[in-house]
Length: 386
Image (cartoon, rainbow, N blue to C red; front, side):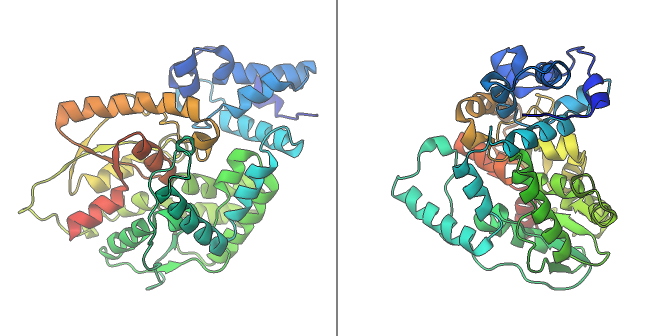
């Protein structure tokens, strides 16, 4: 196969190794080939030296969580996310990765009614003990409750696929908190039920572009697009790069993580109830909120109005969820999660806090499967507003 990458981007890595402590797969294995520096070196041998794309190369790329924790640590500004995405796309185009059964699963995400039916069936299968633990799924609810409905035009609330199927109560909590500021929300129209984030991770570029165009069309106008899933928000903010059109760039400029929007309106949020004890909440930063969107401080701004924020001591190291990574690479994902759970344990010992706030469904479910008590930050805020 022919792998074409940007030569300047490939050359920008000077091999200094400052990325290594921030790479979850390198941290748990110590293998150079499972580090950003090692993966870029492998890309160079293929692109510049004509080395074959063998099973070892595919393994290096498939085991990357795509957390992009290496990017903020890199003094040379290597766009590692661009390089790994382009490589995954090339591998998928040649069917060297993402087999047919995975592609079929990703196809379902763009068909919301089928996804809801399938999710209910999966919840039933869990109760019958038919779902293997290696899938890394926390217990799914049999009842989702009502979908949120439009109440005004101040901003769009993006509901997406997995979030609406598995964590719909978080959408209701999000709408309640947003509307507590006096704003009113509208819900995306037809086609706004999958942003394509997981497809980008899997290398399915054509599917990702198709879903991106549908998502853009589902939320017309100039109102901000508020997203409560870190992975979705990161993908939607990158539509300009994915599609390369002015329309996509304009849409991306409207996308905000909902905590960013709320942090700018913190004084409009209801005052905390001083008669209630302030809970202590441990904050876990989803990688695509911290490293890609760089919006993690907004979560703290919103939470700290009503609770005492407890920080982890691992400098934002990935939890191992990585979209579908925890299901596709369960052993590595489990080892990475163990390090995060150890950090959570230390935070609990130091503060007494037992609840972890995480603004991404994959992270929340992955950590919950490991035994942590995890809530979305806006579920916590909505409860404290009650």
